[in-house]
Image (cartoon, rainbow, N blue to C red; front, side):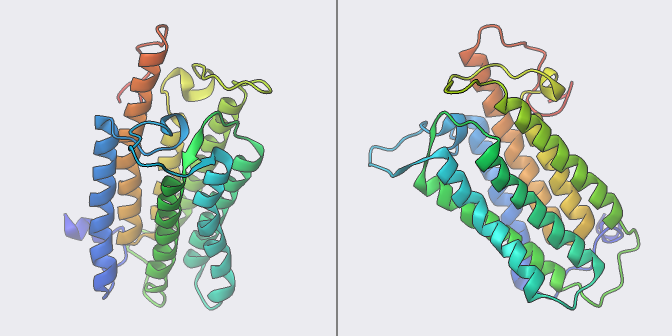
Length: 264
């Protein structure tokens, strides 16, 4: 199995840090996904005020919290264009994909999303540090491949296609969500249109496709760990979201799955 995997990835880098953090990344995000599945949710979006501790916490507007969450990673991706000039095409493709991903996220926060709740400052900082660390480590692990021959199966152009499908599909379903509310409205409604007729979290599905695109472009073991970690976490989060809709709306269609059409 290891030899088959190495047909699709660069050899493991001579870096204990990358090897260790790849394992920790998958394990920690799998644990977060399991926590979401069990009802212990990260405090943002519709779950922003659940599991509230007795101690007072700083509450932000959702827009401010999400800009804190996404902004630093976007800046890091942008800065790496200037910091690393003598790099190959694969590095540039990954760098560009990371920048576009977080640029889109910030643009959606500013111009697309319509928020009804808030966000806990600790949650915003946790998400921000996670995205910043993952972005910086993706870039660093790609730097370690400079000068190495490509993997036997070169997937970078397939990765670009997957990333663009994920990016556009995620944006489209965020746009559909934004259209559920009129000016000044804050109540939740059952989403319709697009893949919402099949799953309650198609934006998560396309986000996973986008992160698979990162892996296919990069073809490093760390980028694989990021894609797997994202999959595990969003499986749990989508399950929690479906349970939330089932508890709030008597007419929620039972055939609508959480994440994967007809399956999960």
